[in-house]
Each structure stands twice: as structure tokens, then as C-alpha cells.
Amino acid sequence: MSLRDQIVQARASHGWLRQGLNKRDAGHETLSHLHTIRTSLEAAWPASKEHGQGPHIRQAIRRLRADAEFHAGVGETEVFRDAELVWKEYDFLEQAFQPAKE
Image 1 (tube, rainbow, N blue to C red):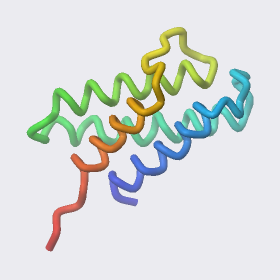
Image 2 (tube, rainbow, N blue to C red; image 1 turned 90 degrees about the horizontal axis):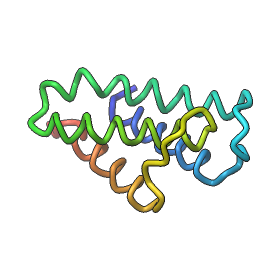
Image 3 (cartoon, rainbow, N blue to C red; image 1 turned 135 degrees about the vertical axis):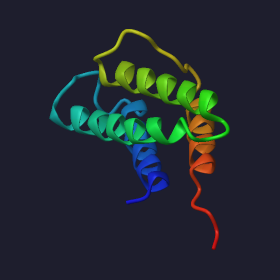
Image 4 (cartoon, helix red, strand yellow; image 1 turned 60 degrees about the horizontal axis):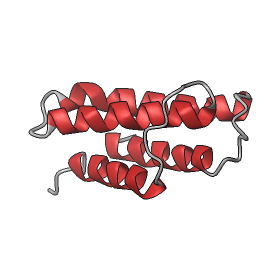
């Protein structure tokens, strides 16, 4: 699975968390979605060090992870009150890790 595909998967899980389907209960399904987000974003961290927009990518990763943890009920910091800002960060990451055209 490509890094971009992992980010798309993280976005879907983040959407589930932000819809409040978990009712801020850190149950199995909630933690599974959080694990998907963490794993996907952690995979992007090393790649960001070689990317021209590395600092912005790492900032997006930190903010998205903190927001996901908040909505999963395991973090204290609400990063994005407006969901549109979350999706803009995912758009940025997807674009940053778009596979090169052959």
C-alpha cells in the first residue's frame, strides 16, 4: 500500500471519529480507527524528512494525530474545531505524497 493510500485510509478513520460515532468512548472500534490513523501518519514521518515541505508535513501529522486522539477520547487537546480544516490537512498530505507520474 502506498503512503498516499495509507493517508486516504487515515482520513476515512478520522472521519469516523469526528462524526462522533464513538461517543467519545475509547472502545475497540474507536481504538482500531485511532490505530489506523497513528500507523498511517507515522509512516509519513520519515518520508517527510526528505520532502521539500517537510516541516509543514510534520506539523500536519502532529495536529491530525492530536485531533484524532481527542475525538477518540484519549487526548485532551482539540486541535481543529472546524472539520474542514482537518480535510485541508489531509488534502495537503495526499498531494505531498502523490506518486510520481511515469
